[in-house]
Image (cartoon, rainbow, N blue to C red; front, side, top):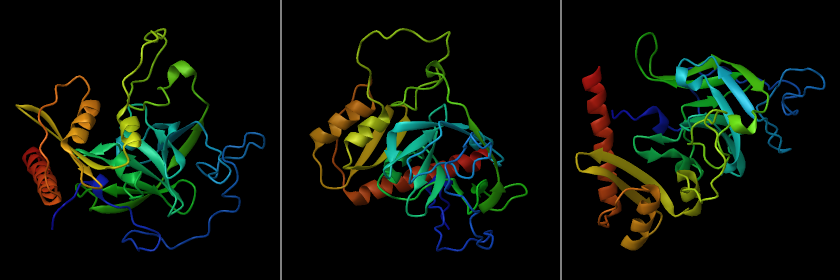
Length: 279
Protein backbone atom coordinates (compact mmCIF):
# COMPACT_ATOMS: atom_id res chain seq x y z
CA UNK A 1 0.00 0.00 0.00
CA UNK A 2 1.35 3.36 -0.98
CA UNK A 3 2.35 5.57 1.94
CA UNK A 4 1.53 9.20 1.68
CA UNK A 5 3.08 12.00 3.66
CA UNK A 6 1.14 13.02 6.80
CA UNK A 7 0.19 16.42 5.39
CA UNK A 8 -1.29 14.79 2.31
CA UNK A 9 -3.79 12.92 4.45
CA UNK A 10 -7.31 14.17 4.99
CA UNK A 11 -8.15 14.40 8.71
CA UNK A 12 -11.12 12.18 9.59
CA UNK A 13 -14.45 13.96 9.52
CA UNK A 14 -16.94 13.84 12.34
CA UNK A 15 -18.90 11.15 10.48
CA UNK A 16 -15.91 8.79 10.16
CA UNK A 17 -14.75 6.64 13.06
CA UNK A 18 -11.09 6.54 14.08
CA UNK A 19 -9.23 3.59 15.49
CA UNK A 20 -8.09 5.68 18.44
CA UNK A 21 -11.11 7.97 18.74
CA UNK A 22 -12.85 8.35 22.09
CA UNK A 23 -16.62 8.13 22.54
CA UNK A 24 -18.34 11.37 21.61
CA UNK A 25 -18.82 13.71 24.55
CA UNK A 26 -20.93 16.80 24.97
CA UNK A 27 -19.04 20.05 24.61
CA UNK A 28 -18.56 21.88 27.91
CA UNK A 29 -21.18 24.48 28.74
CA UNK A 30 -20.18 27.92 27.49
CA UNK A 31 -17.89 26.53 24.81
CA UNK A 32 -18.86 29.27 22.39
CA UNK A 33 -18.23 32.11 24.82
CA UNK A 34 -15.57 34.62 23.87
CA UNK A 35 -12.27 32.89 24.76
CA UNK A 36 -9.84 34.43 27.17
CA UNK A 37 -12.31 36.80 28.78
CA UNK A 38 -10.04 38.55 31.26
CA UNK A 39 -12.83 40.44 33.01
CA UNK A 40 -13.87 37.26 34.88
CA UNK A 41 -10.48 35.60 35.00
CA UNK A 42 -11.94 32.39 33.59
CA UNK A 43 -9.67 30.23 31.42
CA UNK A 44 -10.42 30.21 27.68
CA UNK A 45 -12.84 27.55 26.45
CA UNK A 46 -12.33 27.91 22.70
CA UNK A 47 -9.58 29.11 20.39
CA UNK A 48 -11.91 31.74 18.94
CA UNK A 49 -15.53 32.81 18.73
CA UNK A 50 -15.93 32.39 14.99
CA UNK A 51 -19.59 33.42 14.94
CA UNK A 52 -18.84 36.70 16.71
CA UNK A 53 -15.62 37.32 14.77
CA UNK A 54 -13.47 37.30 17.92
CA UNK A 55 -9.95 35.94 17.33
CA UNK A 56 -7.20 36.27 19.98
CA UNK A 57 -3.86 37.46 18.68
CA UNK A 58 -1.53 34.67 19.80
CA UNK A 59 -1.88 31.06 21.00
CA UNK A 60 0.87 28.85 22.40
CA UNK A 61 0.47 25.08 21.84
CA UNK A 62 2.19 22.58 24.16
CA UNK A 63 1.76 18.81 24.43
CA UNK A 64 2.14 17.46 20.91
CA UNK A 65 4.51 14.56 20.28
CA UNK A 66 5.96 16.33 17.25
CA UNK A 67 8.04 19.17 18.68
CA UNK A 68 7.53 21.43 15.66
CA UNK A 69 3.84 21.69 16.57
CA UNK A 70 4.66 22.95 20.07
CA UNK A 71 4.95 26.57 19.12
CA UNK A 72 3.18 29.93 19.05
CA UNK A 73 0.64 30.76 16.34
CA UNK A 74 0.02 34.42 15.48
CA UNK A 75 -3.22 35.72 13.97
CA UNK A 76 -3.00 36.79 10.33
CA UNK A 77 -6.17 38.54 9.17
CA UNK A 78 -4.78 39.01 5.65
CA UNK A 79 -4.75 35.29 4.82
CA UNK A 80 -8.28 33.93 4.97
CA UNK A 81 -9.26 30.30 4.61
CA UNK A 82 -12.95 29.50 4.27
CA UNK A 83 -13.78 33.12 5.04
CA UNK A 84 -11.96 33.09 8.39
CA UNK A 85 -8.52 34.48 9.34
CA UNK A 86 -5.68 32.04 9.91
CA UNK A 87 -2.85 31.71 12.41
CA UNK A 88 0.84 31.16 11.49
CA UNK A 89 3.96 30.10 13.31
CA UNK A 90 6.78 32.64 13.29
CA UNK A 91 8.72 30.76 10.60
CA UNK A 92 5.72 30.71 8.27
CA UNK A 93 5.94 26.93 7.80
CA UNK A 94 2.77 25.94 9.69
CA UNK A 95 -0.68 27.47 9.72
CA UNK A 96 -3.73 26.99 11.90
CA UNK A 97 -7.08 27.30 10.12
CA UNK A 98 -10.78 26.78 10.79
CA UNK A 99 -12.57 23.93 9.01
CA UNK A 100 -16.10 25.22 8.61
CA UNK A 101 -17.56 21.88 7.52
CA UNK A 102 -16.32 20.18 10.70
CA UNK A 103 -16.49 23.26 12.96
CA UNK A 104 -12.99 22.69 14.29
CA UNK A 105 -9.44 24.01 13.95
CA UNK A 106 -6.59 22.15 12.24
CA UNK A 107 -2.84 22.60 11.80
CA UNK A 108 -1.30 22.15 8.36
CA UNK A 109 2.15 22.73 6.83
CA UNK A 110 2.39 25.39 4.13
CA UNK A 111 4.21 23.07 1.72
CA UNK A 112 4.56 19.28 1.67
CA UNK A 113 6.30 17.23 -1.01
CA UNK A 114 6.35 20.28 -3.28
CA UNK A 115 2.58 20.76 -2.93
CA UNK A 116 1.42 24.15 -1.65
CA UNK A 117 -1.22 23.05 0.85
CA UNK A 118 -2.42 26.58 1.51
CA UNK A 119 -3.84 26.66 -2.01
CA UNK A 120 -5.39 23.22 -1.48
CA UNK A 121 -7.25 24.07 1.74
CA UNK A 122 -8.41 27.40 0.29
CA UNK A 123 -10.29 25.30 -2.26
CA UNK A 124 -12.19 23.60 0.59
CA UNK A 125 -10.15 20.38 0.84
CA UNK A 126 -9.46 19.16 4.38
CA UNK A 127 -5.73 18.69 4.96
CA UNK A 128 -3.64 18.71 8.09
CA UNK A 129 -1.40 16.89 10.55
CA UNK A 130 -3.43 17.73 13.66
CA UNK A 131 -7.03 18.69 14.32
CA UNK A 132 -9.19 19.80 17.24
CA UNK A 133 -11.29 17.35 19.23
CA UNK A 134 -14.63 17.68 21.00
CA UNK A 135 -13.43 19.67 24.00
CA UNK A 136 -11.01 22.55 24.50
CA UNK A 137 -7.44 21.24 24.66
CA UNK A 138 -8.27 17.88 23.08
CA UNK A 139 -6.46 17.39 19.77
CA UNK A 140 -5.67 14.50 17.44
CA UNK A 141 -2.15 14.34 16.01
CA UNK A 142 -1.07 12.23 13.05
CA UNK A 143 1.83 9.95 13.99
CA UNK A 144 3.99 7.97 11.58
CA UNK A 145 4.96 4.44 12.55
CA UNK A 146 8.13 4.24 14.61
CA UNK A 147 9.32 3.64 18.15
CA UNK A 148 6.47 3.13 20.59
CA UNK A 149 3.81 4.48 18.24
CA UNK A 150 1.93 2.90 15.36
CA UNK A 151 0.81 4.92 12.36
CA UNK A 152 -2.47 6.76 12.85
CA UNK A 153 -4.25 9.56 14.66
CA UNK A 154 -3.36 9.87 18.34
CA UNK A 155 -5.44 11.75 20.89
CA UNK A 156 -3.52 14.37 22.90
CA UNK A 157 -4.44 16.67 25.77
CA UNK A 158 -2.72 19.99 25.13
CA UNK A 159 -1.95 23.04 27.19
CA UNK A 160 -3.20 26.01 25.17
CA UNK A 161 -2.15 29.44 26.39
CA UNK A 162 -3.52 32.72 25.09
CA UNK A 163 -0.65 35.22 25.02
CA UNK A 164 -0.67 39.03 24.97
CA UNK A 165 -0.66 40.74 21.61
CA UNK A 166 2.96 41.17 20.41
CA UNK A 167 4.36 44.62 19.77
CA UNK A 168 4.43 45.60 16.07
CA UNK A 169 8.19 45.15 15.84
CA UNK A 170 7.90 41.63 17.31
CA UNK A 171 5.61 40.08 14.71
CA UNK A 172 5.91 39.31 11.00
CA UNK A 173 4.14 41.57 8.53
CA UNK A 174 0.46 40.53 8.45
CA UNK A 175 0.58 39.93 4.72
CA UNK A 176 3.71 37.82 4.80
CA UNK A 177 3.90 34.83 7.18
CA UNK A 178 7.11 33.69 5.50
CA UNK A 179 9.18 36.65 6.63
CA UNK A 180 11.40 36.12 9.71
CA UNK A 181 10.48 37.70 13.05
CA UNK A 182 11.71 41.29 13.28
CA UNK A 183 13.59 42.35 16.38
CA UNK A 184 14.55 45.87 17.48
CA UNK A 185 18.15 45.27 16.35
CA UNK A 186 17.13 44.31 12.82
CA UNK A 187 14.17 46.64 12.36
CA UNK A 188 14.77 49.35 9.79
CA UNK A 189 12.75 52.31 8.49
CA UNK A 190 10.74 51.69 5.35
CA UNK A 191 12.58 52.62 2.18
CA UNK A 192 9.32 53.46 0.44
CA UNK A 193 9.98 50.91 -2.28
CA UNK A 194 7.43 48.27 -3.25
CA UNK A 195 7.84 44.75 -1.88
CA UNK A 196 7.71 41.44 -3.71
CA UNK A 197 4.28 39.76 -3.42
CA UNK A 198 4.29 36.74 -1.13
CA UNK A 199 3.44 33.23 -2.31
CA UNK A 200 0.13 33.47 -0.46
CA UNK A 201 -0.78 36.74 -2.17
CA UNK A 202 0.07 35.30 -5.59
CA UNK A 203 -2.04 32.21 -4.98
CA UNK A 204 -4.93 34.30 -3.68
CA UNK A 205 -4.84 36.38 -6.87
CA UNK A 206 -4.93 33.23 -9.04
CA UNK A 207 -7.73 30.91 -7.82
CA UNK A 208 -7.45 29.03 -11.11
CA UNK A 209 -4.15 27.56 -9.89
CA UNK A 210 -5.00 24.22 -8.26
CA UNK A 211 -1.66 22.61 -7.43
CA UNK A 212 2.07 23.32 -7.54
CA UNK A 213 4.86 20.74 -7.65
CA UNK A 214 8.40 21.91 -6.94
CA UNK A 215 11.53 19.97 -7.85
CA UNK A 216 15.23 20.76 -7.76
CA UNK A 217 18.30 19.22 -9.31
CA UNK A 218 21.69 19.96 -10.91
CA UNK A 219 20.00 22.00 -13.64
CA UNK A 220 18.07 24.15 -11.19
CA UNK A 221 14.58 24.32 -9.73
CA UNK A 222 11.42 23.50 -11.61
CA UNK A 223 7.78 24.32 -10.98
CA UNK A 224 4.92 22.29 -12.45
CA UNK A 225 1.56 24.04 -12.24
CA UNK A 226 -1.90 22.51 -12.46
CA UNK A 227 -4.84 24.73 -13.40
CA UNK A 228 -8.57 24.09 -13.00
CA UNK A 229 -9.01 24.48 -16.77
CA UNK A 230 -6.92 24.52 -19.92
CA UNK A 231 -4.29 27.28 -19.78
CA UNK A 232 -1.72 28.66 -22.19
CA UNK A 233 2.06 28.84 -21.87
CA UNK A 234 2.04 32.59 -21.45
CA UNK A 235 -0.13 32.44 -18.32
CA UNK A 236 2.03 29.68 -16.86
CA UNK A 237 5.23 31.61 -17.57
CA UNK A 238 3.86 34.74 -15.92
CA UNK A 239 3.01 32.77 -12.78
CA UNK A 240 6.40 31.08 -12.73
CA UNK A 241 8.14 34.45 -12.87
CA UNK A 242 6.09 35.62 -9.88
CA UNK A 243 6.60 32.44 -7.84
CA UNK A 244 10.33 32.24 -8.62
CA UNK A 245 11.18 35.91 -8.36
CA UNK A 246 14.84 36.60 -9.01
CA UNK A 247 15.29 33.38 -11.00
CA UNK A 248 15.51 33.21 -14.75
CA UNK A 249 12.54 31.21 -16.02
CA UNK A 250 13.06 28.98 -19.04
CA UNK A 251 10.64 27.71 -21.67
CA UNK A 252 7.30 26.32 -20.55
CA UNK A 253 5.84 23.07 -21.94
CA UNK A 254 2.16 22.27 -21.64
CA UNK A 255 1.41 18.80 -20.28
CA UNK A 256 -1.76 16.76 -19.87
CA UNK A 257 -3.37 15.99 -16.52
CA UNK A 258 -2.22 12.37 -16.76
CA UNK A 259 1.42 13.44 -17.08
CA UNK A 260 1.01 15.75 -14.10
CA UNK A 261 -0.22 12.78 -12.07
CA UNK A 262 2.82 10.79 -13.19
CA UNK A 263 5.15 13.57 -12.08
CA UNK A 264 3.44 13.72 -8.70
CA UNK A 265 3.80 9.95 -8.27
CA UNK A 266 7.50 10.18 -9.18
CA UNK A 267 8.06 12.83 -6.51
CA UNK A 268 6.29 10.70 -3.90
CA UNK A 269 8.36 7.66 -4.89
CA UNK A 270 11.56 9.70 -4.66
CA UNK A 271 10.64 10.84 -1.17
CA UNK A 272 10.05 7.26 -0.05
CA UNK A 273 13.44 6.24 -1.47
CA UNK A 274 15.20 9.05 0.40
CA UNK A 275 13.38 8.11 3.61
CA UNK A 276 14.45 4.48 3.20
CA UNK A 277 18.08 5.50 2.62
CA UNK A 278 18.03 7.67 5.74
CA UNK A 279 16.53 4.88 7.89
